Length: 464
Image 1: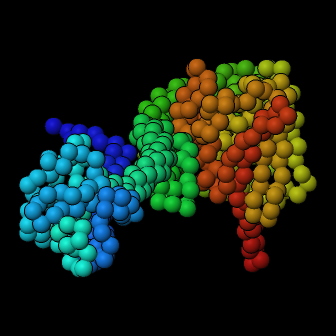
Image 2: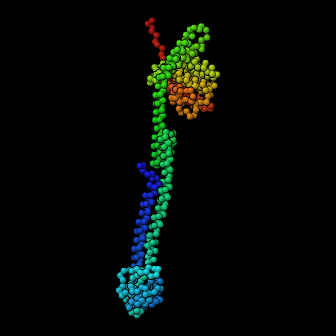
Image 3: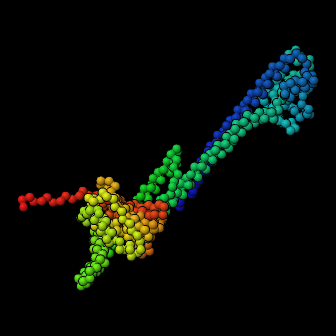
């Protein structure tokens, strides 16, 4: 059975409130007991003062004097004769209800408690001595303290710490609840984003704040997401390349047989026809030869190998491309404009056939979607050349903008998505790159490659 879910709010608030209430209760009880001790000490001090004043007083304790002393000391006084008779009292109640305890001849040593009507009193009796003790007939005096005053003193002593404790609990609980809500909201947001990453949405943006631990956790999760995204892309590329190898092997085998028969048929037709214009047949044979070379590259890809480099001059590659692609563009009513800089005469690419096949793929794609195509050939540095293919077509869909060079990614219903993948493979083989961008309604593919040092002519034999 899975453990029961308990929110962090409860985990934070319950212990805090419980500890605060225990502390407030303990302080309140201690204050109550301390207030009780203080009130008792105050009563004893007042009693001692009254006893010291009245025990040897020379004046008679008449009814008016007893009333005045009662108001002055905030107590109730009862004068008792030797016979136990109550002579005077400040308390307006039937005195017989206080007999016999108050009229006992022996004075009490501690405070006793007595209820009179609705009030409870603490009282103590002391003996009167002095010259006036026998003149007024008062032998003992009972001093009564209202127990309600004592209770109020105890409550006052406990009320302040109790109010302080509960107000502190309320304040701490509110602040803790607010802080916990902020933390839980951030954690909940982070949880939703982690769940999105777990579902494969690696492009999730996680807010990072390096000023606290949650921010550092968010940064760690963001790094994990980026690494997972990179690993996922690498896995897709690896799987695509494996599938490409398998597909290339079968495709190359079938195409090789078909192209061999087609080439033989065209050559036989060329031999049997004696017309002077053989341009179309030459172009057809060139296309078949280029396709055969393309098939040979597929075979090497399927075997995980690379062909030996066959250096070729860049202008020769471009000339061959124009010769083979211009008729196709003319047939599609597409204008292809070729532009070469003047410093390309001695520039060589490391492998002419693969270079021509990659550029041909890019130009054919442009011819298929545009009405005006510009091919700009230049040398960007001593060791690198560049070809830009620009067309006015719609360009790749935005949904495939970052994936068009991946195997089996295509926007054409009848396409396989292998052409641009092989173009990128060729660019990497040539130590360059292939990129694309779109601006002002024009799509531009940029293919760069490393150039090779021109081959030196073989030295002549001077002995001949």
